[in-house]
Image (cartoon, rainbow, N blue to C red; front, side, top):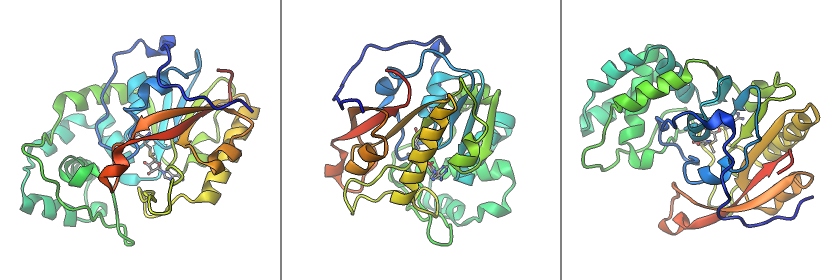
Length: 288
Ligand SMILES: C[S@@+](CC[C@H](N)C(=O)[O-])C[C@H]1O[C@@H](n2cnc3c(N)ncnc32)[C@H](O)[C@@H]1O
């Protein structure tokens, strides 16, 4: 077990795969990794074959890296559909977004639509619209899977980020996009591949349980099964990096791997006081 260290800044290693222009994420996402990015970039392996990001969310690391060969996946179907449509039908998506205005009627009208009745482009436009205009960019659904975040207060939110969408579309061209649980998504990873896991974090307190990205939560048993997958992938020669909260459970589950403690400001939290920097860990199964 390696000693935990608090490292605020590290010199950046720039593997050759990082020579691409960074692309900004197209969705705001709880747990978005923009703030932790320098710490993640500093810990990438020197090189890799295929890149996997099986809890892709907003995909901050994927868009920053621009890997040649990649598979991104998530259990949230709305999110996966946004990436698929951005890759395959970006002009239609831009046209659909340009027709949408920021006002109460449009917001609650869009929110009330059943996404399953929409074609993929309209469905992706709805998701992006709600993400740009809802309170804090949250994604939350009720037990029946209906999006229930209230409208946010913005002065003039940009609903169609044309340039960003076009760049993201280019970056997604060579990418395999799957609606899958993380275990299925990485099942065929082989020696030389690299997987970055960014699961729903283990809550630091019993009230800070923001894990409802999808209708199901991610509990301690799920964290334990994920840790097993992480270790098994390493045994197959797959390099893995994972971020999570710095808790006794997470340290215990990954005790045979390299654990670095890092401080990251939180973007989405219920309480204003929860926005302060919190300790997280970055775990790797390869030599630092
Ligand atoms: C912490 S977020 C990822 C944040 C992302 N790295 C970013 O930069 O925005 C976790 C993601 O895992 C997804 N998720 C939850 N359980 C999952 C599972 N069992 N398999 C795959 N994805 C899952 C959620 O839908 C959510 O998008």
